[in-house]
Image (cartoon, rainbow, N blue to C red; front, side, top):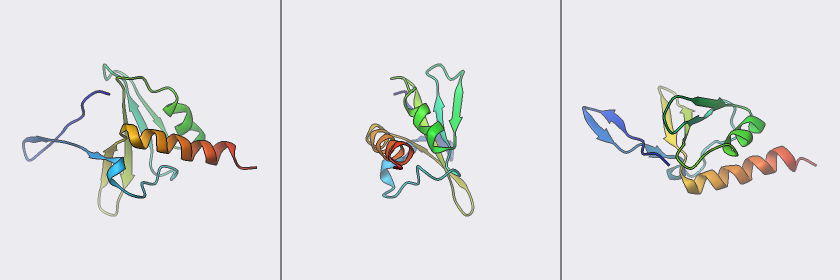
Length: 100
């Protein structure tokens, strides 16, 4: 996965990771998942559960997954790390395909 940094106060900082939030709302349609290609020329965005699951299955090794979680006063962007990638895939897969 490519390195992601953000600039704040003139300094590079590590971005927040989705795994750092205990109950990250992956299934919320207000929390889009974004995939940024390795050369940053393509950004794909998914909001619905099926679209998010499809996007997860298209992610390449050097692409970056981000999630935008709306707050009360600002929108926070998180890097979806490897641990949360697998957890999110399992949750979405269960919700999309195991609805009986």
